[in-house]
Length: 182
Image (cartoon, rainbow, N blue to C red):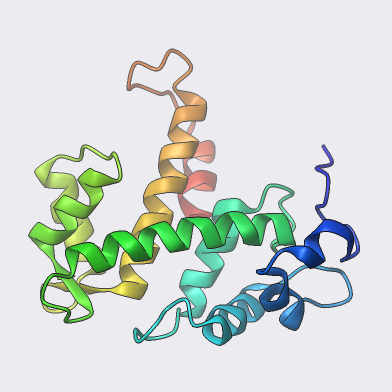
C-alpha cells in the first residue's frame, strides 16, 4: 500500500517543516535515509544533547520500528514520527535522571517505563536491566534502544492479540521474524 509522501521526491509541504532541513542534509536522491545516514542526521541535529551519539545498532532499530514500507530506509514522514518519539523519550529520560549523571538506575527506569504506560513484571524489568545496563546504570542511547524495542514488540504483540486479552498465538517462524527484526 502506498502512503502519501513515502518515497516521494522531496518538496512541497515537507520543505516547510523545520525538521526537513536535518532530513534533507543526509537523504540521498531517493529521499530516504539509511541507518548510517540517520546516525549522522541525529548527531548533527543535537537531539542526543550532551549524551553520546546514537550507535548504529540503535539507528537500525529506530528505522525498523517505523519502516512501514519495509525498505530498510526511512522517508521523511517516518523520520518525523521518529523525531516525535525521540523527543518524548528524551523528555522522559531527563525527568528521571534526577542526579543528572546521563544515566538512569533500575528504579528510575522502572518509573520511566511505567509513565510510558508499560506495566512490566519484576522479572521483565530484571531482563531489561541485564540487557541495557552498564554497571547498573542505563545511558540515554541504551534507554532509547529499550524504548524502541518495547514499542515495536508491543505493536507486534497487539497485532496478534486480536481479542485484546493479553494473549497472542505465534508460529515459530513468525516469532523469529518479529524478534529478529527488532
